[in-house]
Image 1: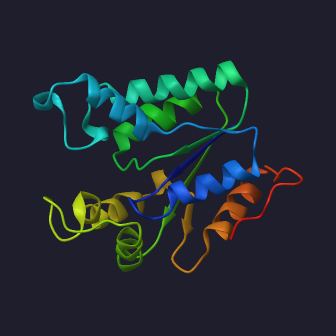
Image 2 (image 1 turned 30 degrees about the vertical axis):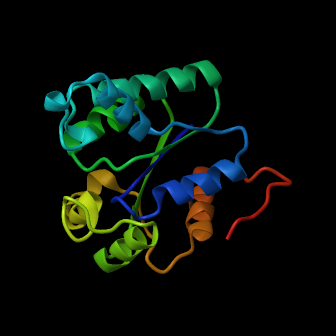
Length: 185
C-alpha cells in the first residue's frame, strides 16, 4: 500500500508521517522533496524552477522512485508531499493507481491562520520572499487548489493533535499499529 499524505506547506504532513512510521516500523518513508533537492543539485541555477511541481522531470522521477520502492521492498510506503496541480497529481498519484498500486491519498487541511502559526512554530520567518517565507506565501493558493474533489480524502487538522490524524489514517487504511510501538502525542 502507498499512503500519500498531501496538504499545504506547514499543515503537518511530515509530523503525521513520522508518527505513522513509528507506528509501522516496517514501512518506508519516501520523501519526494528529497527527489526535488537531488534534481536541483544536478541543475544549474538558471534551469531550476521556483518549486518542484514545476520541474519537468520531477513528477516522473518521483513516480519512478515510489513505483520501484513498492516493487522492490513490498512494504507500505508513506509519502508526504504537497502536490496542488491536478496535472502533476495525475502524473504521480493517478499514474500509480492506474498501474495497479493500492494508493490511499489523504489531504490534510487547516485554516490559513493555523497553518501560518505552525510555520512560525517550526522556525519559518521573514526571508527574501517576505514576512513568512516562500511557504507562507503559498497558503491560500494551496488551500484553494486542495479543496477540489480530486484531492479528497480531506482531513481537517486545525483542532486535532497529529496523533489523532495519524490514527484516522490508520483506521481508514486498515493498517494497524505494530504491538509494542510507543504512542506519540
